[in-house]
Amino acid sequence: LMEVHILGCNALYLSYDHDVTHTAQRIACSVDRSLPLWARADPRFFFNYHATAPLRAAGADRWTVPVLQGFVHHHESVLNGVPVDVLTLARRSARLAGTRFFTRGLGAPDGPEAGEVAHWVESEQILITGGKLYSHVQVRGSVPVLWAQPPRLMVKDPHRALLLAETKQGQQGFARHVSAMQERYGPDIVIVSLLNQRAGAEVTLGHSLCREVVRLQDPGVQLVAWDFHAHCRGGHFERVRALVKLVQDDVLRQGVFEQDMRPRSLTDATGPSGPGGRGAGHV
Image (tube, rainbow, N blue to C red; front, side):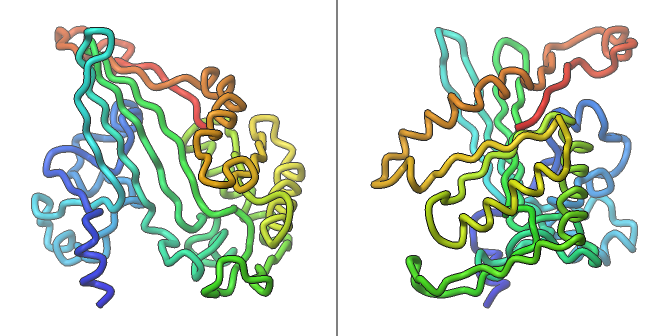
């Protein structure tokens, strides 16, 4: 039943000639494109990795195509009279991928998923116009501390508590998670917490997250706490603009990845600067 549900969820994507598991910046700057498609895929988003083991063992590289679970949408538009292509990709991690209430927080400290968090999604927005590509990436995931939440049917259940383990292993897991983010996306990290700050189990979780950030003492990591429930109560989601304004300086400072897509001469393509493009930061 689970296999039928997953295969029929309309959220699986693949490409025979483009690596859908990597961002535009990684493809341009760090991916070895001489390797087969599966060998250069990001293992975090290679959902059928285990299913394709027999093909890889047999050397059937052409038949081993990475499958991405997430969301892909392409939109053509015109901005100030200039054609614009907008591509949105959301890549869901295959690590700690479980149902909402059964999978929470950091992976087991002594397991293969240590430092990973549940429900990790890498979202990339690509804009192509005037022969140039612009890419911005942001990520989301479960609160990166050791915690669990017994599933209950009632949303506003006073007995719906969370199980929090604020141990040294949890501290190491948080530090490992942040280190992995900085290695993949850059040293400038802005953590946005949407947790409830007024009442309930989320308050405890928010305090734990704050303590971990303070304990880390990394000037490149900052925490922005914004109570989504309080600000958007009653379905007023337009109030998210206040959050955008709150982090806009960080977004502008980090910038976007820019790549020249126009045809170039062989000399330009293989010159000292390598593949055309300049780096970006990360929120």
